[in-house]
Length: 264
Image: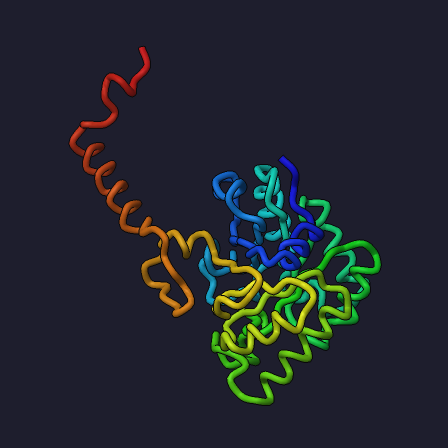
């Protein structure tokens, strides 16, 4: 099976075919989603989903390399993009290049960075040296403290103008796509129509060129996580809890293991 490239994703936008993306962090989920999606993102959201942190800021490059290797081993179709974590690309262009290279060596086909105009010089530097870069504007989790929390962005006129400018600058800097997170759907639609490169929405409405959700979220594995943008396509939290409850009961009652589960 042919691995999708950034050219394939651009072709989907040009032909008005929706791009399907999920965020995953390990080999098991990677193998399960590979044939059904176009893009797998190894997100620094693993800091919250996997590590139990309140935000993404503590995630290290080593964390991302580890999870990238795990996901990459089971992909044969989907394009693999990986988040560059906090302070791995903001310090200098040279440091960004070195860190992006480590992610590509771990199996990534491209990297994702957050920010607008302020990050464009770095994006240009990376893309000129052969590293594909996906942008990310709107709610940028690495700026959670500056934004005052995980809040919808782009409601005010000045914010809308800035986001539109940021997206255009990302495109001009060489980004091959841009994530639009938690912004009004009319703004996301305007941005999608004004850009030549694909937009991937999360909490940005149906007008984007594609959509991304975290695999744990769409499967309903955290019943306490209920953002407006999320649709659960399964309710695995209750199924998992019920399965473990049954397992525990059978162990305590000596109903498991049976003879059929034992060696002689």
